[in-house]
Length: 367
Ligand SMILES: Cc1cc2nc3c(=O)[nH]c(=O)nc-3n(C[C@H](O)[C@H](O)[C@H](O)COP(=O)(O)OP(=O)(O)OC[C@H]3O[C@@H](n4cnc5c(N)ncnc54)[C@H](O)[C@@H]3O)c2cc1C
Image (cartoon, rainbow, N blue to C red):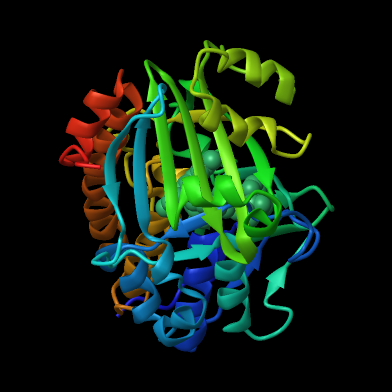
């Protein structure tokens, strides 16, 4: 049996927190570093649907499924697909679904509540990392320096640890999502509430897409997805609500209202990805999970995979032979992620509502 390593987890997103929960439950020591200054330092963003074999399985493994059920919104699993002329092409009320939604903020609260207070070392933004013999040395923006036997990079899309394992950098995926908000939608925008329904609305014309998702508290988040060409280091252009309305000038008025009636704040999300099937050569003292390992365009899988990676890594680390089990886990994780990334890529390049319908495998709505 190998001695238990001195572990650092960098990043308290879904992957880092789930891993921390599992190690804590197993009575294993670890240190969890997070760049954010506090749990409420920034909004965690929209909602996630958790899948049985990945996100839900990971929460079950940590004994957190019951608590998840308290937040899970089974009633918001619906999906509607429109074309730009407002024709409904697919409608699924989601009643038979088993992918309940949860707000990201609720997921983070749920995971944090399962850890002792002060487990997360907030305000520790990793700036540099280097292999030092059998260990990895971490240097943080606040001056803290520490060496660990096993470092887990759970630090997301722009991981500072990934470059130690691979020279591959994320590339812009050719789209940027512009996020807008419709708070209090049932009362303030009842027609839009009815249009979106209980779940997600998708409307598509060519590579331009409009998403609207119902979140907790009758809050609808709208994402206008535009094709763009961004080079490495380029920032996505800042667009106003008026700019976006011009981009959707030819669309059906009901769909345009999702933008017209939203608040003024517009947040760009330039979408980046690692190559499908991205891999690295194993190093004993460093591994990656979640977006750090396999960043892909959003297709409903990223957070689910991140949670499952973390659960599987916890099994490997606690197995008694972590030096053998971690590389074996990496192989399984990479193969699983490659399948999901290929599927996300097919959704990304869908060039029409019909094409998207084929990819989703749906039947045209009879409505
Ligand atoms: C617009 C959009 C919509 C999405 N929708 C979905 C969806 O519906 N379903 C789904 O499953 N996935 C979705 N995803 C993907 C999902 O958000 C990610 O895959 C998931 O959050 C990855 O989890 P993670 O823990 O690996 O990384 P993250 O959630 O990115 O967490 C990384 C953590 O590391 C911290 N960190 C970063 N750098 C450092 C540093 N240098 N030092 C210390 N800490 C650091 C960050 O502050 C953060 O807390 C979406 C993504 C986007 C952009």
